[in-house]
Length: 157
Image 1 (cartoon, helix red, strand yellow):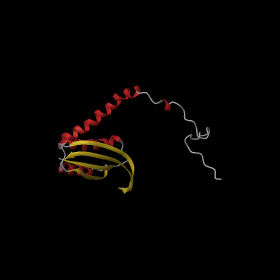
Image 2 (cartoon, helix red, strand yellow):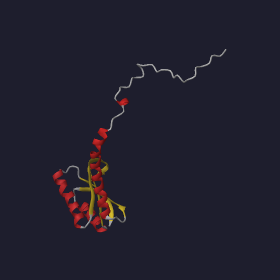
Image 3 (tube, one colour):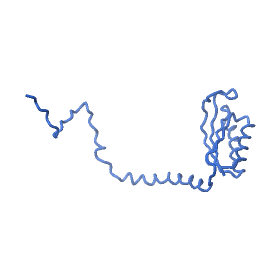
Image 4 (cartoon, rainbow, N blue to C red):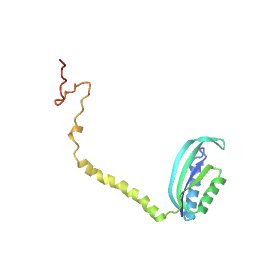
């Protein structure tokens, strides 16, 4: 199985109720074709670099998924024939992917996010240095003391 990234731009004038069935259709297609959706990332509405179908703005979406070439062809076919899609592009990220190890990697960040919250009470028990509690004097208010170890300048005779 290969890992792909597809970025597509949908019509910005669509409401969420009109846009969601299109997204749902693509997500269902991935599961029907025995693919694995790694990430569905909505970037939101952005200004386009150039006008596409008389639109100057577009709603960007990034799909990160694993699947076969047939899955990519079907996603691109849907984007091509659906009027809600303005533009799309698919890029191959990895040639051979182990889906099980990818699922484990995705589960690990969720558990590591919980760990710092458990560690925070320990950090609260650690005393902070006292110097941090005392306010630092401003340089303009207090003159700097001269260093005792510094040699005094010699007078020339």
